[in-house]
Image (cartoon, rainbow, N blue to C red):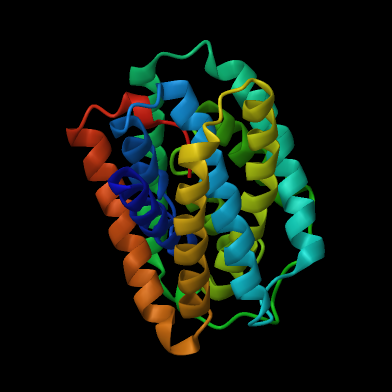
Length: 256
């Protein structure tokens, strides 16, 4: 009973953080492994959390009228294709190099956040740009990165949605939730086929993630919360960088 309660709480925190920023798996993966799941099984089981937070985050944003289904599906397909390629390449890289890739990538995101905060905070609902080859190539590259490392890929998805596609922070988080739902379903099917999903641990984790994601989505959709969501995003990126630099967390280079 205690294990189930802790798993639900970890899922709630992970879903809330992932929906507002990214990196919620830094909470959910260690929780699963703490209760004895092998690394690969924890990684597969965590995909239930990703699907749940993607689904309920999307529902929360949809109720606020912020989900562009067509554009979200278009981007999700491109990212999913890149993820397949990145996964095939990943086996050739050592964990130390993957750690370095993540740190450099997150530093880039942090610089983008701090240089021109107005691009993240401004209301730009009417300025979404037409989808072109430049955006397609960028999202495919993000998919390759997600296949290679995965940790922190949500930050890159959000940055691309805002800086390239022209979403504001609210729209970007809404589309990110939908994209994570599609990509998460893809990976969950793969891990389930390989029998690397522990449903008894994954279901309470997913319930917690769904609740946290839905509440975060309703909060992030509010105009008055825009600045707070931006500050939270900056904080989570900084903490992710510090965590990677100080803690040997090569085991947790798996998602969001």
